[in-house]
Image 1 (spheres, rainbow, N blue to C red):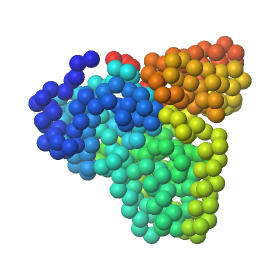
Image 2 (cartoon, helix red, strand yellow):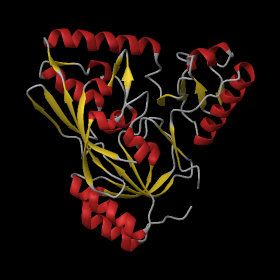
Image 3 (cartoon, helix red, strand yellow):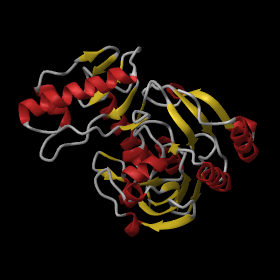
Image 4 (cartoon, rainbow, N blue to C red):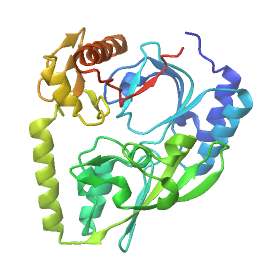
Length: 308
């Protein structure tokens, strides 16, 4: 599909973020954990909030579609790619600061990096997220959780970009976190920074808990294969992986996409998967489970570029 980014617009974006901060027709398979996806018209790599605000303002002025991503860990991108501008926060916008018991992390910092910073500072409470393959911004919006821990348990406040492009402070109460849900998700806010309140503890004890969680993940999840993490939301009263396994779909394959043979809640890329393969597999799983159980399997993975 034809790019929506004119040479004039590209020059304006480059004037904001620098030549190295703009990648045109960039394959998103290079930027998602699924290793799937066609090109973005423009992938922008900002270094500060002012650049982000300026890019947002330019997109509004020119009527360009605008999306944000971190590490691309919960996204399936169409084989045709995504039109408009994508702002990638991971990489250049990932500073972490420790002050006493508080950690302030920019949205592009990975959960693993923040957990390591907490460990180094002797601060406990974020161990649960050390193996979640995503960024702080995504964790805040999705209220990421694992092994009885959730983002809302440690977050005190956020700095966000609202739907008008203004910087706003959001308290934990205002964030209204729930299961894989938040106010930011509802209102289309972009998380730029998060502040976490943690608890002092012995580094060796924190490390032991992180090691235990890593071993549990590695034994149960297909971390060695490209995926977007857990593919389906948990249906009320059920476990997605068990429903899929009980339906005989463990290992089920469409093209290069497969229901993991290690954990049925994961769709993995065996090496040659297209987005079309993944979409067909998700549809097949939905249809089989609905036929058997009358349960709708709703994807947890965000879908980009399919409306085009």
